[in-house]
Length: 189
Image (cartoon, rainbow, N blue to C red; front, side, top):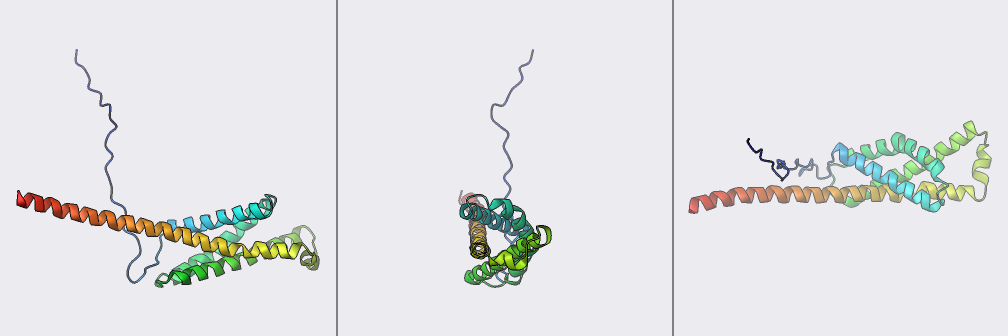
């Protein structure tokens, strides 16, 4: 009777080097589709968190659908356009300002979409929609908070890919040094 050998250790997983980042000297702020999607989702998550905080959770009933529609129809296309046009601009403050402006435009579009929905489907008069003493400052705040959300969404995404690029170049540098050091060790032996 033969005994079968059972390996108690898991099989070794082949290590694959990370992919080269899309950023080059001519396009220092280029981005991948995943980085763009991640930035849009971070911005939307920050917006929902602020809406939950500012409206004590009640505003999420409207913020989730109207925020998502506004993100998909206004915010994400404008952010993609701005990011694509600014790929060659190295200064991060220009990107921060531009994406904050995109966030403010998206916030105004979201409030407009909410007002239009109330006028068309709830029978609310346009004049009375903004004439309440408590409603227009609230809508103004809701429109304004999307600017900082877009700013921090871009900033968080930017910092994550700077860290990923640093890891990539450090790993590839270490790999190159290990190749050279192994050939030097073999030559000296």
